Amino acid sequence: MFSDSELSSIKQLLSPDKNIVITTHHNPDGDAIGSSLGLKHFLAAKGIDATVITPNDFPKFLKWMPEAKKTIIGEYKRKQAGEAIYNADVIFCLDYNATVRAGIIGDWIYKSRAKKILIDHHQMPEQFDFVYSDTNVPATCQMVYHFIQALEEEDLVNQDIAECLYTGIMTDTGGFRFRSTSATTHRIVANLIEKGADPAKISSNTWDNNTISRLNLLSLVLSRIEVVNNGKVAIMWLKREELKALGFEKGDTEGFVNYGLSISGTRMSVFFMEDLYEDFIKISFRSKDDVDTNQLARKHFNGGGHINASGGKYFKSIEDTIEDFKNIIEKEDF
Ligand code: 5GP
Ligand code: MN
Image (cartoon, rainbow, N blue to C red; front, side, top):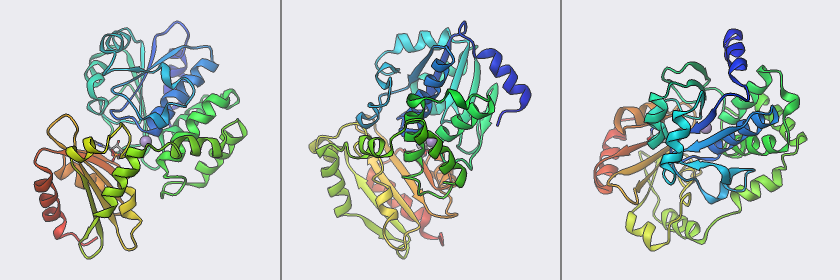
């Protein structure tokens, strides 16, 4: 948590006469959108207006969240996003550890004269004016809740805040399953339910909102899943032409990588996907226990993340990328 002196400086900054912008990472997920909107609703409960800006669009299954549609999406509204960031007094940086992770708005955030407040659970954060970083917390949404507690304003938590924060905790813990899901997480989740988050509604909105294209893509990916390293590593992939042929929509492949980990005996799962527009391969890594995908992604695949969930990019053909990956992990004994 922020120190007491940081908290009192932050309290000073949180006032209705300040321009407050909330930002999150490229390809926002449930935790990114949930923490951003949850914080926005918390500030609104304090009588403070804040603008949420994402670098690019986010999946439809997150658009049910209260005020999700008021988000300024940088890739569609460059000018408005740029001006809001330029005029900001305070910028919250949620669920990312380095401004490059904020895609097209990252550079504007970096150059902005605003006070920057980081709340994030990824490894090795960059310098920001105020940093609350904790890799042991499973979701940035949980950290936003801790921040509200530290401000002694838990009583302001209303249904909008609760729904948004619940969503991010639910998605980043894989439905309260992943290993940093703690008793504290569950206590917070219990509070959020009491404040109006409805577990059945939220999980249904988030997970029972599949497109047909998603199921068709999943079917293809699962039909050719490959297991290497004595059954320890699962590999999946999709090509651009396949995405196009099956009618890919944003968010369709979210979570595919987790299926590899559900195979008995696997310790790591990797999903390779040709980017739809640019010439690179987007890679997602997931692992169990102490198998460190963050190091692997940082060292070899221009990325990073958490120990058990990270991502990266690779600038070769998909065949060569998979070949290189296999060679890199061949000697590893997971
Ligand atoms: P996903 O596989 O869902 O895209 O990402 C999993 C995790 O890795 C997320 O926490 C995300 O922030 C991180 N991550 C994904 N892609 C990248 C990347 O290109 N660079 C870095 N540093 N982290 C990434
Ligand atoms: Mn997160």
